[in-house]
Amino acid sequence: MILSGKNILVGVTGGIAAYKITYLVRHFIKANANVKVMMTKEAKDFVTPLSLSTLSKNPVFSDFVEGEDELWNNHVELGKWADFICIAPATANTLAKMVSGHSDNFFMATYLSADCPVYIAPAMDLDMYQHPTTHQNIEKLKSYGNIIIPAESGELASGLVGEGRMAEPENILDFIEKDLKKNLMLNGKKVLITAGPTYEAIDPVRFIGNHSSGKMGYAIAEAAAKNGAEVILISGPTALKIEEKGIKVQNVVSAEEMYNAVMQEYKNCDVFISAAAVADYTPTEIAEEKIKKSGNNLQINLKKTKDILLEAGKRKQHQFVVGFALETENEEENALGKLRKKNLNFIVLNSLRDKGAGFATDTNKVKIISEKETQTFNLKSKTAVAQDIIAEISKQLTLEK
Ligand code: CTP
Image (cartoon, rainbow, N blue to C red; front, side, top):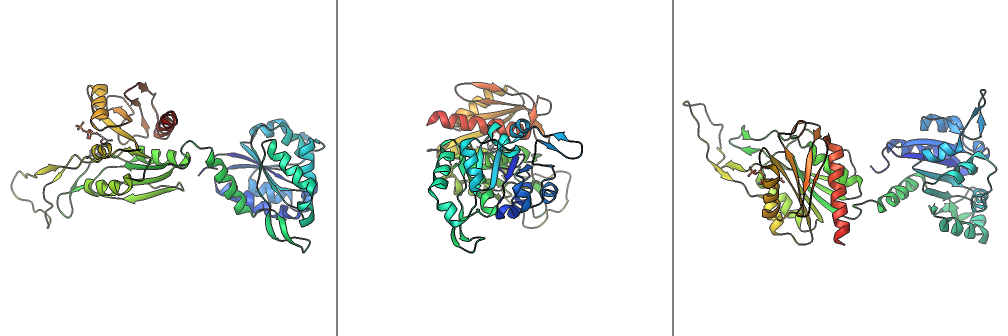
């Protein structure tokens, strides 16, 4: 979720739509954002600071000096804290003050000292909204870099019907999420990822598997989605769950199923990241009934599985293709061999000789190897490694343009 962990400063001014800001704050909190609210004195006539401080889980700011202890509210600090400001509702009076820089209250002083993006959701009555001054003010605010969330049409508090109603809280949320995504590294890209192990059935109850937890592939899927990509995650059996919106998960069990699922989606993807620990061999036959115990030895014949990544490399057209290599010796040389053989853009190498790297851990230590260079990264959480991988893909995609 793009708003997760973001610091949002909500600015409320004195219009009837102010009561709806309780819902807006709730939406931001539900999206895991940190929310602080500042309001003008006039806004307090329409919604109470207590409602907004309860919902935002933070004190509400209204004046430079507040409370019995006469505490000083630092407008500069508050502005710097915010990743963005959302002014809703923004009255005609506030728009005019913002245009002229008329700093006669805490709200305006904070707005003027903030250097983060500012979203403005105007709200006023029909004729006020249509007044040339309002139009001019809105255009000026846009030219200063502010982002306007257009007012909606409908019944207004005066009884008139038309444009001027503040955008509904869920539409404000939607507008901001979409706008933030526009600036993300992988916006508009379709990213296909494989993750986890595959299980190769021996009989109805047994299989050959491996210790892959899927954590690396899932972390990459989340990092890609956070950076604006539309993600398809083809997952072998894991205990992991995906929270992130924008990730479509397809569960598969065997290497054959994973191969088919990938080939189905490959043509339309922009990036393919093969993080799964795909079984290299699978039983030549699956016994129809459970194999009974008999004798001291049991032989199972295995045949090679299809190499999904090799095939993806062969079919490569516009796709950017990334593979993984888990090595125990001659690491870089082997990884480079795989990079060439499978026609990859880069390969992520983990060495089992590095402590904290590999399958079941929450950390990883990788090298990113391409024809041009080898980059060595420190031991990090898999989430941070995933971010490094996505950043490298984005960088190379930008260079390709
Ligand atoms: N891979 C795949 N399909 C397979 C086997 C591997 O897509 N059937 C992918 C993995 O997801 C990984 C990369 O290929 O990105 C690993 O390369 P590979 O040469 O298969 O490594 P190993 O399986 O470790 O091979 P080896 O035992 O020869 O080192």
